[in-house]
Length: 193
Image (cartoon, rainbow, N blue to C red):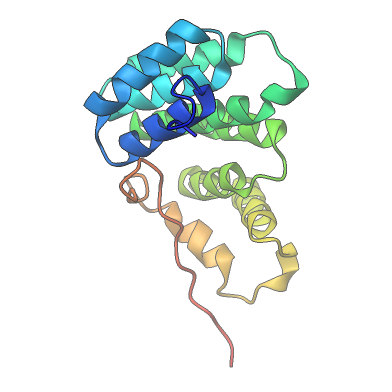
């Protein structure tokens, strides 16, 4: 699309995002800056700029961009960028050790896009980590994890996701990153025969 129309905003942003995923913020920045000049109020432009700040090691600037997305005037088509901004704020909160705040951002992302399982799964795993013996939080974490996997809470055996979520509470650090700043999906052991 860029070859036919160099000013095509969605294609510019897609290229910038691809460059950011390859850790090439220097090449992505000119594309993002041009997009900001063309449509500074575009929520996707703000989102990509936030990702660039994260890649450059500036989480406070990234958080400011994500907060601007949440503070922008809402329209029905803005749910996805808002949900992604909430997820990004949750991820930044986890990295900063602000786990309760991170869980709230994931809850907000769930409210924006209930069908998106990423925020649900991340919130479930985070609640499992911060449950600290709280049976209600563990139960909520199990229900959320089951929801994220598309299964009923009672579908799992004794050692299914409940064990994974509860044992996640013993971890001191966030889940390992997959190279693009997102936590890897944990592998759950199968039980039964």
